Length: 100
Image (cartoon, rainbow, N blue to C red; front, side, top):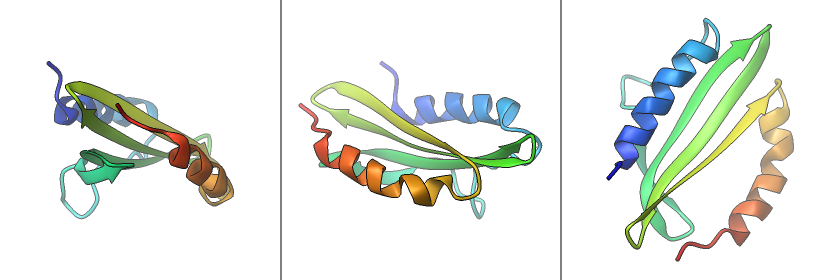
């Protein structure tokens, strides 16, 4: 069985090779995965940043467990104002995600 830590470690490696020279996966020396809760399901969350062709990119993700299942949710934003612009849509989507 794959663990949340393994999912994030694999994605971290992919991000470092695809998100340009400014790829960041660890903030303040901490591991990339931090304890998180997504609509009642416990797991790990992460936030990676980088830039491609001079445009900033962000990936936020959550790897959560629910009833012996592992769910991986991730969002990618491109552009300086994309994360703020997409926040209302993300909140609406998040509100409607339910885990078994």
